[in-house]
Length: 302
Ligand SMILES: Nc1ncnc2c1ncn2[C@@H]1O[C@H](COP(=O)(O)OP(=O)(O)OP(=O)(O)O)[C@@H](O)[C@H]1O
Ligand SMILES: [Mg+2]
Image 1 (cartoon, rainbow, N blue to C red):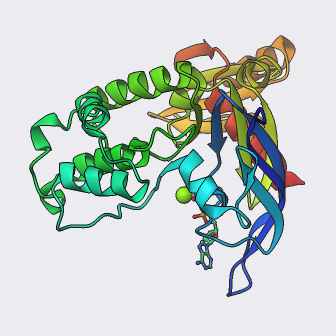
Image 2: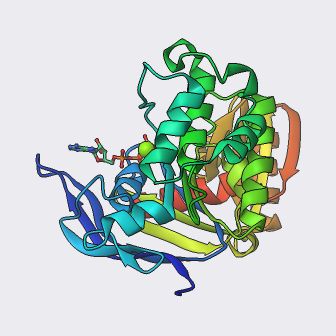
């Protein structure tokens, strides 16, 4: 038994139209990890996940899941892997329970009712067990996608934006459930655009940009290594000279990053000189969002 859940070696994907969606990506996810795969829209996350599941064929490179090569042992990979796809795809003629039973049958599991009941319960779908899947709301369809990926208790669970369109309460229930599965030994790989979810849940984080891996480290380390001071300013405008420090802009506030307190002091002097009133100012703790934005911008300059 290997202690590597997923191994990706020099993965390259060039789509039929010539677009290179994966550019020599290599990394490993260990058994039992809670791992995040982050990146802007189009970075290549879904392509990589689809390649893990054997739904997209790599142009070059290899991927194995629990020691099984995706190309050579596709069924072993499927048994070991549960993917919650980003797109909603399911049979619209089945009720929720039928869909889960059918999926269990696909994996040769005849009596799966106890586990199906448990999944339905944790995903808040118990009331909907007899409802036809096409008559579920959008968020409920997504819950069904999660349920379908879990019927065979796969050792490796991959969630491609599972919380998009899901309400706050279910998001919390879903994460509590996934956390428990992780504590029971399941490996979890997650993509999300909610960076605070990745920050709180995942012990290691990979970031992709334009098909390349641009960062891969322990969450703590990524946060810790982010030197400098992040400050949010509520102002009408920024002095021209410090505009280049801007890393983000939200809720009418500018988020700026300075190397040290000297730089910050100089910036404050500029506000003063240009008579720009600071309505609010706050020194922010480093969060994953600022690390993410910085790494993405750094790469742009290279
Ligand atoms: N079948 C295809 N043919 C050509 N290009 C494709 C195909 N599928 C995906 N792409 C392109 O590959 C790139 C990566 O897409 P992918 O879906 O992997 O990104 P992503 O990181 O999952 O993005 P998102 O956060 O929006 O889900 C995009 O530029 C996309 O347009
Ligand atoms: Mg995607």
